[in-house]
Image (cartoon, rainbow, N blue to C red; front, side):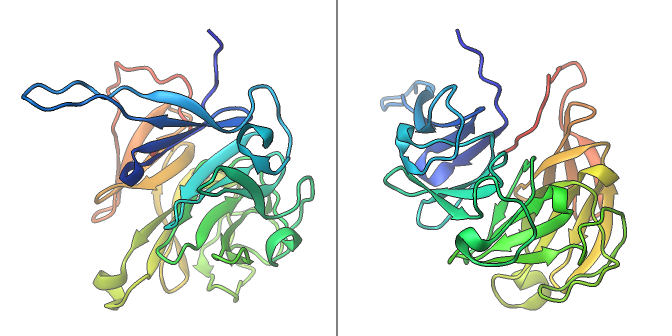
Length: 287
Protein backbone atom coordinates (compact mmCIF):
# COMPACT_ATOMS: atom_id res chain seq x y z
CA UNK A 1 0.00 0.00 0.00
CA UNK A 2 1.36 3.41 -0.96
CA UNK A 3 1.82 5.72 1.99
CA UNK A 4 0.52 9.28 1.60
CA UNK A 5 1.63 11.97 4.03
CA UNK A 6 -1.43 14.12 4.81
CA UNK A 7 -0.96 17.79 5.54
CA UNK A 8 -4.55 18.96 6.09
CA UNK A 9 -8.15 17.83 6.20
CA UNK A 10 -11.19 19.95 5.47
CA UNK A 11 -14.76 18.73 5.99
CA UNK A 12 -17.66 20.29 4.12
CA UNK A 13 -20.42 18.91 6.32
CA UNK A 14 -23.28 20.45 4.38
CA UNK A 15 -22.19 18.52 1.30
CA UNK A 16 -20.95 15.41 3.10
CA UNK A 17 -17.52 15.94 1.56
CA UNK A 18 -14.03 16.06 2.95
CA UNK A 19 -11.02 17.42 1.15
CA UNK A 20 -7.84 15.64 2.11
CA UNK A 21 -4.45 16.95 1.06
CA UNK A 22 -1.45 14.92 0.01
CA UNK A 23 1.87 15.81 -1.52
CA UNK A 24 0.61 16.79 -4.96
CA UNK A 25 -3.07 15.93 -5.19
CA UNK A 26 -6.41 16.56 -3.56
CA UNK A 27 -8.76 13.72 -2.64
CA UNK A 28 -12.47 13.77 -1.92
CA UNK A 29 -14.09 11.47 0.62
CA UNK A 30 -17.85 10.87 0.78
CA UNK A 31 -19.74 9.13 3.55
CA UNK A 32 -21.81 6.05 2.75
CA UNK A 33 -23.91 3.48 4.54
CA UNK A 34 -26.78 4.14 6.90
CA UNK A 35 -30.28 2.77 6.68
CA UNK A 36 -33.67 2.57 8.32
CA UNK A 37 -35.44 0.05 10.45
CA UNK A 38 -33.55 0.42 13.71
CA UNK A 39 -29.83 -0.29 13.62
CA UNK A 40 -27.69 1.89 11.42
CA UNK A 41 -24.61 0.99 9.44
CA UNK A 42 -21.56 3.16 10.11
CA UNK A 43 -20.63 5.44 7.27
CA UNK A 44 -17.65 4.40 5.20
CA UNK A 45 -15.32 6.87 3.52
CA UNK A 46 -14.60 6.42 -0.17
CA UNK A 47 -11.61 8.29 -1.52
CA UNK A 48 -11.33 9.61 -5.05
CA UNK A 49 -8.92 12.05 -6.66
CA UNK A 50 -10.47 15.50 -6.81
CA UNK A 51 -7.59 17.31 -8.45
CA UNK A 52 -3.99 16.58 -9.37
CA UNK A 53 -2.13 13.32 -9.76
CA UNK A 54 -0.03 11.08 -7.52
CA UNK A 55 3.66 11.81 -8.00
CA UNK A 56 2.94 14.60 -10.47
CA UNK A 57 3.79 17.97 -8.88
CA UNK A 58 3.51 21.13 -10.95
CA UNK A 59 1.36 24.20 -11.46
CA UNK A 60 -0.96 23.39 -14.34
CA UNK A 61 -4.54 24.66 -14.46
CA UNK A 62 -7.13 22.23 -15.82
CA UNK A 63 -9.86 19.75 -15.00
CA UNK A 64 -9.44 17.08 -12.32
CA UNK A 65 -6.40 14.86 -12.71
CA UNK A 66 -5.12 16.92 -15.66
CA UNK A 67 -4.30 19.74 -13.22
CA UNK A 68 -1.12 19.91 -11.17
CA UNK A 69 -0.26 21.51 -7.84
CA UNK A 70 2.89 21.54 -5.74
CA UNK A 71 2.64 20.88 -2.01
CA UNK A 72 -0.97 22.01 -1.52
CA UNK A 73 -1.71 23.30 1.96
CA UNK A 74 -4.83 24.53 3.71
CA UNK A 75 -8.25 24.95 2.09
CA UNK A 76 -11.51 26.81 2.48
CA UNK A 77 -14.87 26.41 0.71
CA UNK A 78 -16.95 29.42 -0.29
CA UNK A 79 -20.72 29.85 -0.31
CA UNK A 80 -20.89 28.62 -3.93
CA UNK A 81 -19.05 25.37 -3.18
CA UNK A 82 -15.75 26.46 -4.76
CA UNK A 83 -12.65 25.08 -3.04
CA UNK A 84 -9.63 27.35 -2.57
CA UNK A 85 -6.23 26.07 -1.51
CA UNK A 86 -2.74 27.39 -0.95
CA UNK A 87 -0.33 25.93 -3.50
CA UNK A 88 2.67 26.53 -1.28
CA UNK A 89 5.66 25.69 -3.50
CA UNK A 90 4.10 27.66 -6.36
CA UNK A 91 3.27 30.63 -4.07
CA UNK A 92 -0.29 30.87 -5.41
CA UNK A 93 -3.87 30.54 -4.24
CA UNK A 94 -5.72 28.07 -6.47
CA UNK A 95 -9.45 27.51 -7.03
CA UNK A 96 -11.42 24.35 -7.84
CA UNK A 97 -14.89 25.15 -9.12
CA UNK A 98 -17.99 22.98 -8.77
CA UNK A 99 -17.13 21.20 -12.05
CA UNK A 100 -13.69 20.20 -10.75
CA UNK A 101 -11.74 22.67 -12.91
CA UNK A 102 -8.61 24.09 -11.26
CA UNK A 103 -7.50 27.67 -11.92
CA UNK A 104 -5.03 30.10 -10.40
CA UNK A 105 -7.05 32.58 -8.33
CA UNK A 106 -4.23 34.84 -7.14
CA UNK A 107 -0.49 35.01 -7.64
CA UNK A 108 1.77 33.67 -10.38
CA UNK A 109 3.52 30.31 -10.07
CA UNK A 110 7.16 30.64 -9.09
CA UNK A 111 6.92 34.40 -8.50
CA UNK A 112 7.37 35.71 -4.94
CA UNK A 113 6.85 39.16 -3.48
CA UNK A 114 4.51 41.28 -1.38
CA UNK A 115 2.44 43.05 -4.04
CA UNK A 116 -1.16 43.84 -3.13
CA UNK A 117 -3.04 43.59 -6.42
CA UNK A 118 -5.67 41.54 -8.21
CA UNK A 119 -5.39 38.05 -9.69
CA UNK A 120 -2.05 37.03 -11.15
CA UNK A 121 -0.52 40.45 -10.40
CA UNK A 122 -0.57 39.76 -6.65
CA UNK A 123 2.51 38.23 -5.04
CA UNK A 124 3.05 36.06 -1.94
CA UNK A 125 5.97 34.33 -0.31
CA UNK A 126 4.81 31.33 1.70
CA UNK A 127 6.01 27.78 2.08
CA UNK A 128 3.67 26.68 4.89
CA UNK A 129 -0.06 27.45 5.14
CA UNK A 130 -1.57 25.24 7.84
CA UNK A 131 -4.99 26.89 7.97
CA UNK A 132 -6.97 29.58 6.18
CA UNK A 133 -10.38 31.08 6.95
CA UNK A 134 -13.25 32.51 4.93
CA UNK A 135 -15.96 34.94 5.99
CA UNK A 136 -19.61 35.31 5.01
CA UNK A 137 -18.68 37.62 2.12
CA UNK A 138 -16.21 35.04 0.75
CA UNK A 139 -13.13 37.03 1.77
CA UNK A 140 -10.25 34.61 2.38
CA UNK A 141 -7.71 35.23 5.16
CA UNK A 142 -4.38 33.40 5.22
CA UNK A 143 -0.83 33.66 6.59
CA UNK A 144 1.92 34.79 4.21
CA UNK A 145 4.54 33.27 6.46
CA UNK A 146 7.82 34.24 4.80
CA UNK A 147 6.58 37.81 4.44
CA UNK A 148 5.44 37.76 8.10
CA UNK A 149 2.02 39.14 7.16
CA UNK A 150 -1.66 38.21 7.22
CA UNK A 151 -3.22 38.66 3.78
CA UNK A 152 -6.80 38.82 2.55
CA UNK A 153 -8.32 38.04 -0.86
CA UNK A 154 -11.79 39.27 -1.72
CA UNK A 155 -14.33 37.40 -3.84
CA UNK A 156 -12.98 39.08 -6.98
CA UNK A 157 -9.44 37.88 -6.39
CA UNK A 158 -8.02 41.21 -5.18
CA UNK A 159 -5.37 40.88 -2.46
CA UNK A 160 -4.65 43.24 0.43
CA UNK A 161 -2.37 43.07 3.45
CA UNK A 162 -4.65 42.70 6.47
CA UNK A 163 -1.98 42.92 9.18
CA UNK A 164 1.77 43.02 9.40
CA UNK A 165 4.75 45.31 8.93
CA UNK A 166 5.35 47.69 6.05
CA UNK A 167 8.59 45.80 5.56
CA UNK A 168 8.84 41.99 5.68
CA UNK A 169 10.80 42.03 8.94
CA UNK A 170 9.96 39.35 11.48
CA UNK A 171 9.45 40.25 15.12
CA UNK A 172 7.05 40.24 18.03
CA UNK A 173 5.25 43.51 18.61
CA UNK A 174 1.64 44.49 19.11
CA UNK A 175 -0.13 47.60 17.91
CA UNK A 176 -3.00 48.69 15.69
CA UNK A 177 -2.98 47.28 12.17
CA UNK A 178 -6.11 48.41 10.38
CA UNK A 179 -6.70 47.19 6.86
CA UNK A 180 -4.96 49.70 4.60
CA UNK A 181 -3.14 51.41 7.50
CA UNK A 182 -0.16 49.26 8.50
CA UNK A 183 2.09 50.83 11.17
CA UNK A 184 5.64 49.47 11.20
CA UNK A 185 5.51 48.46 14.88
CA UNK A 186 3.24 45.39 14.34
CA UNK A 187 5.31 42.23 13.89
CA UNK A 188 4.75 38.50 13.36
CA UNK A 189 7.33 35.74 13.01
CA UNK A 190 6.49 32.96 10.57
CA UNK A 191 2.68 32.90 11.03
CA UNK A 192 1.24 29.66 9.64
CA UNK A 193 -2.47 29.56 10.55
CA UNK A 194 -5.54 31.83 10.71
CA UNK A 195 -9.05 31.44 12.17
CA UNK A 196 -12.05 33.79 12.31
CA UNK A 197 -14.54 34.39 15.12
CA UNK A 198 -17.73 36.27 14.27
CA UNK A 199 -18.28 39.04 16.82
CA UNK A 200 -21.05 40.83 14.92
CA UNK A 201 -23.77 40.63 17.57
CA UNK A 202 -21.65 40.57 20.72
CA UNK A 203 -19.43 43.54 19.89
CA UNK A 204 -20.92 45.60 17.10
CA UNK A 205 -24.59 44.70 16.89
CA UNK A 206 -24.14 44.33 13.14
CA UNK A 207 -23.15 41.58 10.72
CA UNK A 208 -19.98 40.15 9.17
CA UNK A 209 -17.55 41.59 11.74
CA UNK A 210 -14.71 39.29 12.82
CA UNK A 211 -11.82 38.86 15.19
CA UNK A 212 -8.89 37.18 13.47
CA UNK A 213 -6.72 34.71 15.39
CA UNK A 214 -3.21 33.92 14.18
CA UNK A 215 -0.87 31.03 14.90
CA UNK A 216 2.32 33.08 15.23
CA UNK A 217 4.48 30.00 15.00
CA UNK A 218 7.92 31.58 15.32
CA UNK A 219 6.86 33.52 18.41
CA UNK A 220 5.10 30.52 20.05
CA UNK A 221 1.94 32.57 20.44
CA UNK A 222 -1.69 32.75 19.42
CA UNK A 223 -2.19 36.38 18.47
CA UNK A 224 -5.48 38.23 18.14
CA UNK A 225 -6.39 40.95 15.64
CA UNK A 226 -9.64 42.32 16.94
CA UNK A 227 -12.35 43.87 14.81
CA UNK A 228 -10.95 47.34 15.53
CA UNK A 229 -7.50 46.35 14.24
CA UNK A 230 -5.68 45.99 17.57
CA UNK A 231 -3.08 43.20 17.61
CA UNK A 232 -2.48 41.54 21.00
CA UNK A 233 -1.14 38.30 22.47
CA UNK A 234 -3.79 35.76 23.50
CA UNK A 235 -1.98 32.68 24.85
CA UNK A 236 1.34 30.88 24.48
CA UNK A 237 1.49 27.58 22.56
CA UNK A 238 4.79 25.73 22.09
CA UNK A 239 4.66 25.55 18.27
CA UNK A 240 1.21 26.47 16.98
CA UNK A 241 0.19 25.33 13.51
CA UNK A 242 -3.32 24.94 12.13
CA UNK A 243 -6.00 26.81 14.06
CA UNK A 244 -9.78 26.47 13.67
CA UNK A 245 -12.87 27.83 15.37
CA UNK A 246 -15.02 25.28 17.16
CA UNK A 247 -18.53 25.81 18.50
CA UNK A 248 -17.21 28.06 21.29
CA UNK A 249 -13.42 27.88 21.51
CA UNK A 250 -10.40 27.60 19.23
CA UNK A 251 -8.53 24.40 18.49
CA UNK A 252 -4.83 24.53 17.68
CA UNK A 253 -2.26 21.99 16.56
CA UNK A 254 0.78 22.09 18.86
CA UNK A 255 3.37 20.70 16.46
CA UNK A 256 6.20 20.61 18.99
CA UNK A 257 4.28 18.59 21.61
CA UNK A 258 2.35 16.60 18.98
CA UNK A 259 -0.95 17.58 20.58
CA UNK A 260 -4.28 19.22 19.82
CA UNK A 261 -4.96 22.12 22.18
CA UNK A 262 -8.22 23.85 23.06
CA UNK A 263 -7.85 27.59 23.54
CA UNK A 264 -10.72 28.98 25.58
CA UNK A 265 -11.83 32.48 24.58
CA UNK A 266 -13.94 33.49 27.59
CA UNK A 267 -10.93 33.23 29.91
CA UNK A 268 -7.97 32.65 27.57
CA UNK A 269 -6.12 29.48 28.51
CA UNK A 270 -4.81 26.31 26.86
CA UNK A 271 -6.02 22.76 27.56
CA UNK A 272 -4.67 19.71 25.73
CA UNK A 273 -7.43 17.73 24.00
CA UNK A 274 -5.32 14.61 23.39
CA UNK A 275 -5.02 11.79 25.93
CA UNK A 276 -1.33 11.67 26.89
CA UNK A 277 -1.33 7.91 26.27
CA UNK A 278 -2.30 8.52 22.62
CA UNK A 279 0.65 9.23 20.35
CA UNK A 280 0.24 11.57 17.38
CA UNK A 281 3.11 11.22 14.92
CA UNK A 282 3.16 14.63 13.25
CA UNK A 283 -0.15 16.54 13.48
CA UNK A 284 -0.51 19.48 11.11
CA UNK A 285 -4.07 19.98 9.87
CA UNK A 286 -7.43 20.40 11.61
CA UNK A 287 -11.07 20.49 10.53
